[in-house]
Image 1: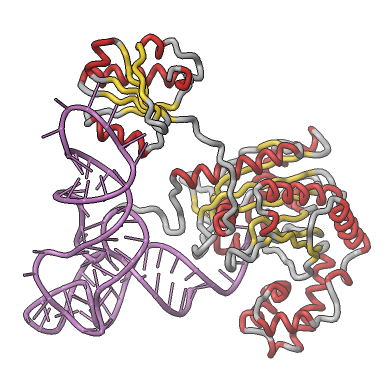
Image 2: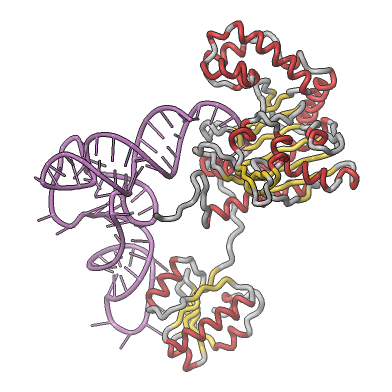
Length: 427
RNA sequence: GUGGGUGUAGCUCAGCCCGGUUAGAGCACUUGGUUGUGGCCCAAGAGGUCGCCGGUUCAAAUCCGGUCAUCCACCCCA
């Protein structure tokens, strides 16, 4: 039996790894412009970090976490998302004492035991940001502005939509939920089977259903969550909307948005696309004013979001969005003929690499033709050829692979080549 | 957890319905096309337990059953 990777896990190789890192880098730089600094936290935490953080009843905690007992008898879980761990670290290091506002971002792999499908893996990368210490709507607005700038710099702003909503405080939400339940129960028969179950599990989710009859039914609801929000929550939402208008950030108020995590209060938002099938969210977040307190820290308001890097990659691919890649250094291939030349080639390669150049050479004796083919295939800009003739004359042949131009040059010139090793000057 | 699709060379796939000699193609790889020069072209070569197990049959990649893997969709989510 061959050993294979775990179901739902992916190996990633060259051009893709580069694309992912470049997306990550772009986003990271935007975050830093907003004054966020990176936090690196463990992939493994005590399970209660997530059960109290995300809520016992959430799907993530109930059935999607990789949880196991350590030899020491502790129950631990692989992180299914970033916020809970960042909050734990925020509390553990008493960051609230160091500064009234703390802005942190993280990037890394998350683990969820879900059924994999397009745009959904059991291990995926998220980059996310959390702002602690402000309950002002301007903080929400800044977080959203940062997300928007990130997708703009990624070239994706045309392909995504920013949807937001307020789900108020738990007590307000409960009232709304109750009213919703009452309304929906009366029309139970026109709901899809799923939604009939949701009535007992999570009535808010019915709003999210895509079934035609459910959409029709829910769009006829004569009241909205805003009717149940406190003056403060409504004011918060209004102020946020106003700020987004002023920053000209396109957005859509969508009263149907509900989030899967318990910790959100007031603002929730999603960055969605219609180009990834049912995996339509590429980033999501919101405000969570109660979480720090709930996890044992001082009452601290906070807002944040996370972005799925693989989904961003998929979206870039599907929309044919070109990103200018950082551009690799030009490659030089050292080609050798004969044992003596082979060793010489190894030394020249080493020398040029110390000078900062990108250099390839063949380890074994191969024909000139095959080495040239390889140089061509790997996209070398120049070839340095060391054969018996060159060795005897203490020279090397330098070939420009694009033009085919070739010249014989004394070896000392190679040694005297400056830091950048500009071969153009030699030709 | 539920439903559907697909498993044949490193990759993308044909062949399967209508069982039958050494299981194919393209790409990639290796070597060569007269002495030490790449790209195009040409030739040769290497590479496969036809996912696995069992059944039917004189004979199975092909038919049947099971199993595993993977993908897609639902659920949920980034």
